[in-house]
Length: 152
Image (cartoon, rainbow, N blue to C red):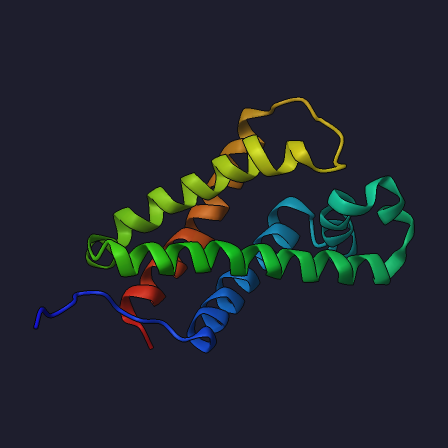
């Protein structure tokens, strides 16, 4: 009988990792991108599915945006944990895996997901793009990579 180097993750573990990464990312977005405007940041996220009306919905649409934010964090966490069960090198090279995964998440969000939403197209700003990428590396990529490798 062959031994498998695959690691199995429970739904609870994936959910906990997603909650940690999603919270770090949400806090960074509120602090660095939203200038401490919790409602505005999460209304912006809600506007992806609701359109501009999300900005008139108050805390209710901010909470919809918060739920959407955590759903996205869960999806990216699940993708990485599944990939790490198939590719053990992802768990061995935590820092490199986290940096690369943060860049992959930024690329997918910027070039694929956001353009498919109701968020209006905005001009590209290098400084904002770099800040977004750095936030995703430090708040999504590295925590997911580390916590997945640690498998607590």
